[in-house]
Length: 387
Image 1 (tube, one colour):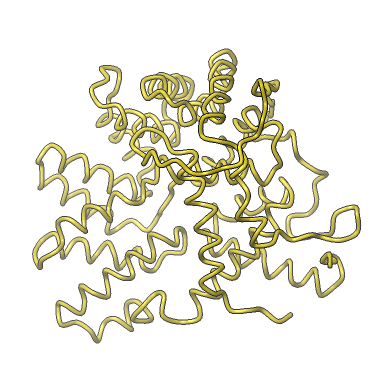
Image 2 (image 1 turned 135 degrees about the horizontal axis):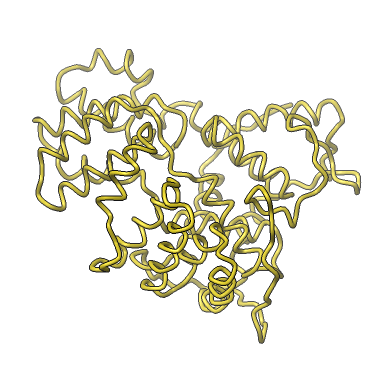
């Protein structure tokens, strides 16, 4: 099958989905931009029963299970991939005010059920910062050493400083034990150290980060928990709308992989101890496949810092190419990501398949593997693309 090179239009579509969701679903410290939307006209936000799942994942929309590596057309005989225009329109059908009204229903159900995913989702979806802390702490009480609950309690408390129930540093110490292989833990510890003017502790945490390859922002788990919550707050919406809603909440809240980039951007401007440790971190992150945005930032800075240090001969050896965005591989990756999303958003089963692969293969790795199998299924006739 002929595959087209991704163009800037596709990049805009992908960013529109994420950034559009960011603007609509942001809370707390997120920018409070308003966007023009076609608001749905409903007198009362729909209320649904709490979806129950022994696995902790939303099963209310699941279609019959199929082998993970087999993709097939829907029962009507062909698969309708979402177009660029359809993808762009997802998530733009409800106003910010309506989403906030609907979040109140989720908060009540979450508190009554003590369902951890719903508590965590409500903590993000509520417009009240103080209520967000309360809900995040309730979720943490249910599963005290769970990494995602710890992260979300930390994020809620950082949005509402001064809360006496918050113990961010102790929670980060716990994460350094239960999530020690996650480099983002050490970046957050470094940021906290700098906030209390402890530069030695910050540099020590960054040195640990430079030796840790794991990058886990818990993207897939965050998406799943929001999808369960949006089964309630967007019960009348299409599956694709709920996915874009979930992506918007995740993008606007808790993007922990920016901690290290902010630190290095501020403190590594000139050669010195910070530049050295940030270069070590960047060289490690530039080789990982888990988070494309973190990898791109790491690749850019590592190249610049190696060049500034007169080590240009190492760029090709350490980074593979001088510019992460300069060759066809990056654009082909965007092509794969767009095509995978156009397929995955057609059903809950296929989107869950993408999330599962993303956990082990990273965002682009998951997209590439899905696209390879989708194209094979199209060529073999298992999938017939609608005209």
